[in-house]
Image 1 (cartoon, rainbow, N blue to C red):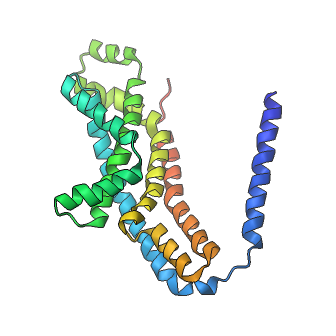
Image 2 (cartoon, one colour):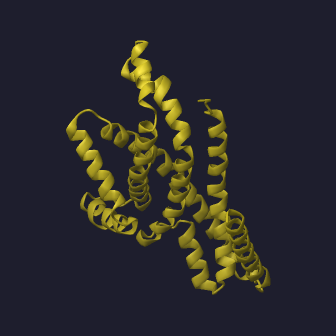
Image 3 (cartoon, helix red, strand yellow):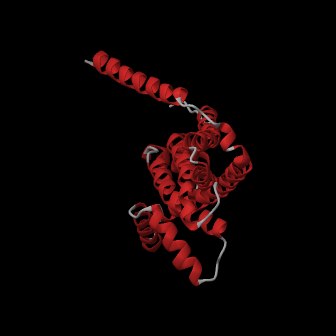
Length: 244
């Protein structure tokens, strides 16, 4: 049964891949149509890169704070962190972007579309990362805590030397996936007129009616941003490998 399922999945994936390659290869490309817009596409790619790097860094900080809040022994930070995580994860990112920019940012006079976009993406991704981090910490066996207390380690030392090193490796794959999602989610910032990669590709398509020629570079550009994250995740998994 397992061999049949494995064969079926392989055939379906193989046929799908061949079909996509055939569609892409059979298209009559007219790259000269988008030649005047290569600078726009590259500018959009750089904007997406800047948004992604800033949001990745800030989202880790937000997630760390939320994780600490959820694991706190005090009820108020636990409750506030949980409410934030559930609210962010339970509402669409598109709605958060629109409300965050046109209502919240506008009400305080903050008109930086780039800055608002970074903060909203960071807050959104931070909520998901917080759950990943919390799960990683809580997955460490309780015997590890008991052993740390037995040898006289403080709570801070236990986290630093025992819990966090083990939790880091466990959360790396899921974190890498969330980082990749964050990069792709940045494409939604076009709704507040951030001239990122997707918006530039849409404008090229609108001006030239060359959909393939506009969107294939966009696909390649996003792969150039997300694939290194996958490679880095695999490297860090080996770097933080522990024998159990």
